[in-house]
Amino acid sequence: MKHVSILVPEQSVLQAIADPQYCFTTVNRFLEMSGKEKLFQVELVGLKRKVKLNNGTYCIHPERLINDVATTDLTIIPALAGHLPDALEANKDFIPWINRQYNKGTEVASLCLGAFLLASTGLLNGHKCSTHWGFTNQFRQMFPEVDVQDGMIVTEENGIYSSGGANSYWNLLLHLVEKYTDREMAVLISKYFAIDINRNSQSPFTIFSGQKAHNDDTVKKAQEYIEQHIDDRISIEDLIDNLAVGRRSFERRFKQATNNSVLEYIQRVKIEAAKRTIESSRKYISEVMFDVGYNDTKAFRTTFKKITGLTPAEYRNRYSKV
Image 1: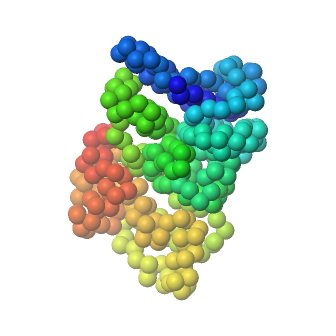
Image 2 (image 1 turned 180 degrees about the vertical axis):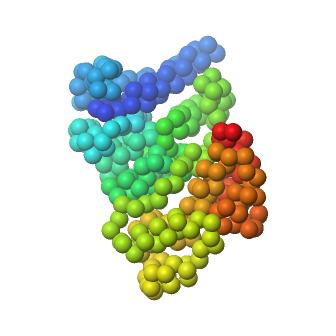
Image 3 (image 1 turned 60 degrees about the horizontal axis):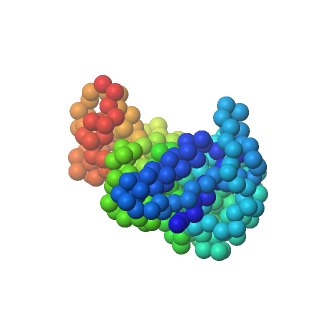
C-alpha cells in the first residue's frame, strides 16, 4: 500500500488539500469495486492539531503530526495563499521534514503555489519546476537557482513533481494516479472528475503583463515604447536608436531584466493586445492582426498559437464575450 501524506500548511488553499484526498480515496473505491485491494493510505499531516484557513472560516484537524510520520511514499504540498513570504515563514518547520523524507526515498509533489514551499527546501535547485503562471516572476526573484517552466502544467524530475496554476493540479494528480496504477484508472478518474487528461499547458490562460520589477531604467523605457507602439512593426534597431544604446549590451540587459528576449517581449505584448480584442470585439481576425502590427497572416497565426496554445479562431470560440 502506498502511503500518501498531504500536508496541511498555514495559509494554504482548502481545495488543494481536499482534492488530492478525494482523488486518491476515489481511486481506492474504484479498485474495491473491481474486486481489488485499496492502494492508497491517505493522511493529512500538519505541524499542529488544528489549522485555521481563510481567516478562520475553515478549520482542518490533521490526522498526524509530522514528527509522528517516520516514512511515507508520497508527500503532497498544497497550494499556498496570501502573502507568500509570510506563508513560507509560517510553514518553515515543514522544510527539514520534507528534506528528510525525500532523502529516504519519498516522492514529493507540489500543487500550484505549493512550489514556493517546495523550492524553500533547496530540493529544486538546478532542476525544473512548474507553478502558477501569474507568479513565475516572483518565483524567479525568490528562487533564481530553480528552472521554472513557463506555461507547463506538470513537471517531473528526480521524484519531484510540480503543477501549474489553480486547477492545473488535477492534471498532476491524474499523472500520479497513472504512475501508481495504470492509464485505464487515470482515464476513469479524469472522466469521473470531468478533467481534461491531455492538457499540458497553461498558455491559453496566461495574461502577460510584462516584468517591470527591476531597476534598469533603459529597459523600462524600451518596454514602455513597445507597449505604446503595439500597432507598429517594431525592430530591435528602432529601440536601440531611440534609446541610444549598444545592441549587444541592450539585448543582454533586456533578457536579464525581463526573462524574455526583446523579440519575445514584443511578440507577447502584441499577442496579449490581440487576445483582448478577440475577447471583446467582433473584429475579423485579419483586422486584429493589422491592429497589432502584423501583415502576414501565417506569421501572426503561428506566433499566436506558440504563445497561447490556440489558433486565433480557437481562442475566439473559447473566450469571446460577444
